[in-house]
Image 1 (cartoon, rainbow, N blue to C red):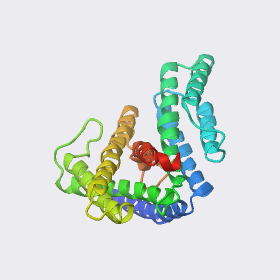
Image 2 (cartoon, rainbow, N blue to C red):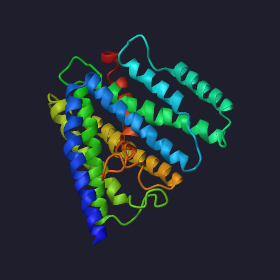
Image 3 (cartoon, one colour):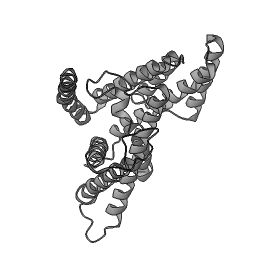
Length: 288
């Protein structure tokens, strides 16, 4: 009886988060600008606190001050064209973290340094790619907002198909030591669903005047399937691997019924930077 009540409460919390969160995200994607940027950086900050909470379970103390200063710098790169993220900036912040650790006198300095830099890149830099995608301006009808919506929808479709088909038909596990519920049937179903979705988008939105030339729509759909249907799922495994290391089921409890922010953003944390690189180099003559 008590278990059923807890399950019902969890379902109600999940529905409430969906009812409030989905319109908020869609409106942020639509309006873009500082509104969308602030929403993503809230997710970045909350995800960092979740990583920190997991680390404390193993007596690992990451350097929040340098990490948050890096986030401020990332935030400002979208507001001022005169500053940007480059290899020199990453070197500077890595040196900063290494230098700070010398004077902290903590028990696990190597772990502190490693996970501080991991968090800075994996959470901050990779999730910042979502904002960079939204700010892309091609001058066409298809621009940053459309690309961002495509990214979120593709990841959602992949996750949903993988869960539905995997739970019903999946038997063979992919990496049971990392994520015991992920099956090959689920993973392949997710990738196929992304291909179907993206090939429709490619034919009717990206290349509506393709005529009999199917090469670019099909190639685009295959690349997007690799990004959202394969790399995105690897992102899920990466987060599961980290949680397994710290002995937790969910990264947090901020999103009632959905776990934490890391649990919701895990696929995007690898898919978004991959998609950004694809857009940057395929549209380099347009967006610079």
